[in-house]
Amino acid sequence: MVSDLTPPVQHEITKPSPLLDESGALVQIGWARRPLLDCNMEMAHTVGLRPLQRFRAKRWDYYGVTTPEGYFSITLADLGYAGSVFVYVVDFADASYHEESVTVPLGRGITLARNSDTGDCTYSSKRVDVGFYVEDGARRIKVRWDKFDGVPLHADLRFSLPADHESTVIVTPIQGDRFYYNRKVNSMPVEGTLRIGDETTVMSPESSLGNLDWGRGVWEYNSFWVWASASGFLGDGRRVGLNMGRGFGDTSAATENTLLLDGRIHKLGDVAIDYEASDFMRPWQMRSERVDLVFTPFVERVAETKLVVIDSEVHQMFGRYVGSIVADDGESVEIEGVVGWAEEHHARW
Image (cartoon, rainbow, N blue to C red; front, side, top):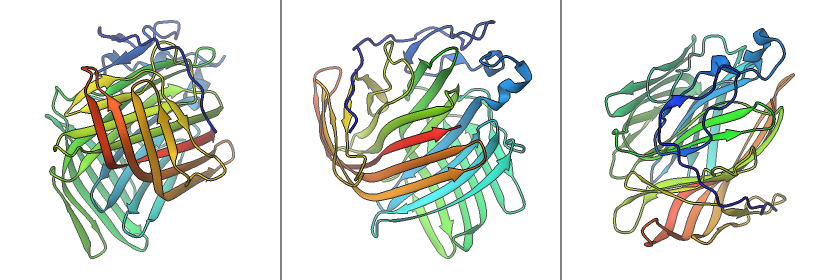
């Protein structure tokens, strides 16, 4: 069971700056509504020999889209020692999922943009093409995967992301000179198609919402975190997004806990996330002065990576959130069966 709390201090970053100074120290610490900091990872200095620094850097772009029928996700990641490209599909009706991945030695061929608001991210091989493209007011996701569960997969999706759509951006110091710079975007209206074999799913903004988890940092070799998220619709039709997490770094300046309503962030303080690690399918509880949620899983996705220097295990539970959250203006926002996920992740990387 996990139920620890940190002080309710929430420092909002409002001015642009580099992420790191010349010594490799964080310039600003806290949270922001937009990606204001330039991610100058080349200034990181957490190992004695600078040429070895790249092996400690962790970078990834994770996109997902929730539809009434299921969830589709594609990731490009460079973990220093190795890169990873993976795609998975969750079917809500029969509580099943399928996943395919490619491991790329030293991350060669994976291109990840410096910052989250400009630049493209790509990977291409004989059987896989992945592209994340920044467009005016949108993100374009294109995927070709020749053999996904034995059949071709093609995706061409447009995530709407206008300039006034706010994000959960955090800068978290980790022990020593380590750090995590993260941007999470929820509830982006999605349109496009996902074709797997002979089956085509047409996505429309009225029913399909996307999310982005953009991460850059230098972590401890042994790391642990809990992440809970959802993108859906309220009973009155408003788009809602949830983001909660804990488990790594010093969160005394800011947590990553937020409520998103129609593109506007409502900042939450500490949230206790309680669950049973011996049975992830039991209901989870999220509690604070402003949060009263129960998350009931209906499918468990387990993903493991076993390499020489990388050992990762994630239990990602998909389920429904029920309860209420108090917005910044005092409104009690009722959450009635919004589909999302909650996960526990252990990594040695």
